[in-house]
Length: 180
Image (cartoon, rainbow, N blue to C red; front, side, top):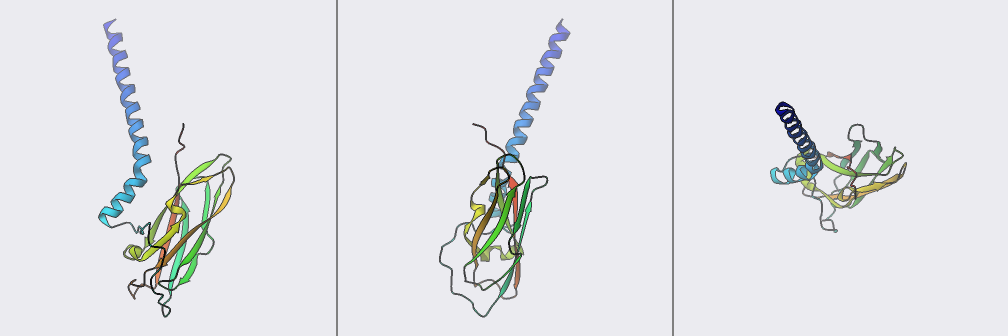
């Protein structure tokens, strides 16, 4: 009988270890986006833009035009459709612009997503200033809902003169459902 108790204890320990590993993996996945933000801020990498900026843009550089390419993607196997309305904007540094993205929940369930921005080339990210962005907040969608999401931004006129094109990308991630 002592052998049976050892096996039960061993199985109980294994079950607890596996449950702890599952909780740790869920926690890691849940904290990955905030950790990414923190690392980009600390290290200064990743093409992240400044999230909150003053509402009033700087002087407009009317003699200069920069092409801003817009892209939208979803993380793998997520039930979203997500793309920009316009794939290119011709912008003058210092002038405020609005770009619109279209997102659609392709499932028959309510979903919540969070968009993560990136700017390329990464050295230009600090010159793209967002005054308002759908990426600042989680987006809750009803089943099969389609919605237009906007970002207001301007380019700082201090953007180096050799930069005449940059890409503003968003990836829409599915957020885990919070059970209450």
